[in-house]
Image (tube, rainbow, N blue to C red; front, side):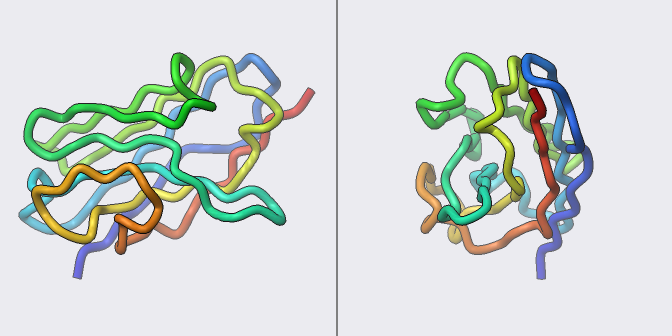
Length: 125
């Protein structure tokens, strides 16, 4: 059973930066797309970014494109989300996730079936 352990997050002023880290257990990390999703109070969970297996191609929601960067280190079974120019509307619980199947490119919430416990990101004015 894969485990996803998140770290990072916290409170930051608008315009600031934060970095999220997710460490995964298991020997097949590099075969799966990894992603970050978020859920704000009263809203549904939404896709933020993903990075494909293999070539590590990144994909972003329009709302974060140009501000967030997803990356992965397959040797360390770790995925990162660098968040710059944070806005009030980025406030949410952020979840690390793994795709349901290996070898898939995933850009929707439904394509992930393993989740971290979530970490709060709060952007203040």
